[in-house]
Length: 251
Image 1 (cartoon, helix red, strand yellow):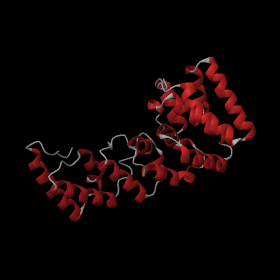
Image 2 (image 1 turned 180 degrees about the horizontal axis):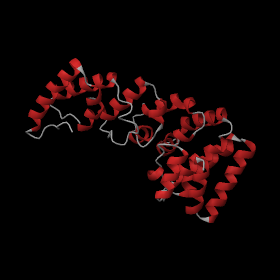
Image 3 (image 1 turned 180 degrees about the vertical axis):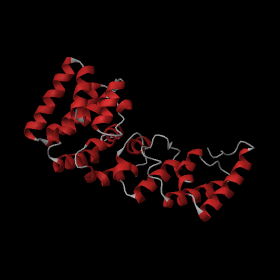
């Protein structure tokens, strides 16, 4: 099944008959006419119509999600997010039109709407078209918007270039956002990122601040030669600081 079909199935199962009727009517109107105004209105009404309850999925649902889009993790989605993405996917046959509407929606979107739009990145057709949009989300100073792109989202690992990927990982550390939910973290390790993170670790160490343990996941696989020697020096000093509870050891 396609992501669009899965979202339809999940929403139909969980929403009331009245809300399902509204959603189906909105989808049909958008698909038949391609009317931008109809899409924008339906997206704006999603919260009022569906509410913000979590999307209730079982293991089979999650496996189907993975089969339809590798890396897709809708387990933490809400009904309103699923409905908004389903409405956008009504335009999936016209990739240029969908991209245009998404850009227009993001201009006036509130934080909740942006989270939904960015969580939908791996599901939109013609994925490379949305690299600039994903990068814009990663620049956001709203943590939940940044994490909508960075966390439980296969899009960055699949589509971002090395520079944008490295900046995403570094920003996550700067802002106190966990690296653990970043899809493809180990697979996208690279020497440039390892060097950037070693510099970051030295800065933290010089300021007598703890070095996030997760940082080493992106450093140790790529550390060789002089970088490895420097890493060993950082680790020894960090371990000494850790004896007073001020830092962390490498896993």
